[in-house]
Image 1: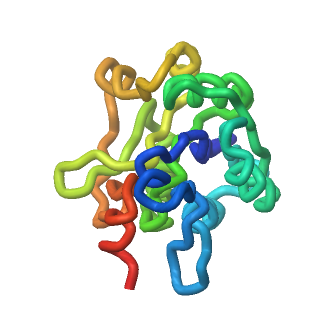
Image 2: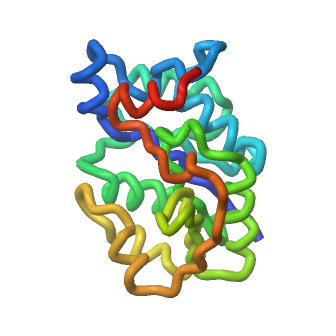
Length: 194
């Protein structure tokens, strides 16, 4: 069974840019080594997935993010997107050879690799799986190939939440606050930096 990961990096980061001198959040340094947020999240995924089984989804309107993603030696998909639903639909369409896939957002630099591993393992036996941290659903979310038609039908800014309401979801308890901590504003990041 081949399981892949879509690393979603196609957003415009408008709130973060507005508050932080136009810098895209995925390019922002998030550790003492000044490693960009997207690279940190990629490295966490790469501990589980081979480079070939990670597809980094970027936006044509964000060339600096695409340039960074291209350095990781994983396949990239540069798209024109009008929201998360569009991005997921296009990415799944290109990666239909995978038997299952996980969707991980690039703005989750504090996620722990064991959380990604837990969802990966659950995809061997479940149609949908996702972590849950103290009652809050987190990321990544895994989908079996049988749901690709629904994922490819997504549009606009609506993610996969409607699919999650229609099908049984295996909730995987984790002690990983990073699975729910996406970064939308510089203040979100400052809470976690030393």
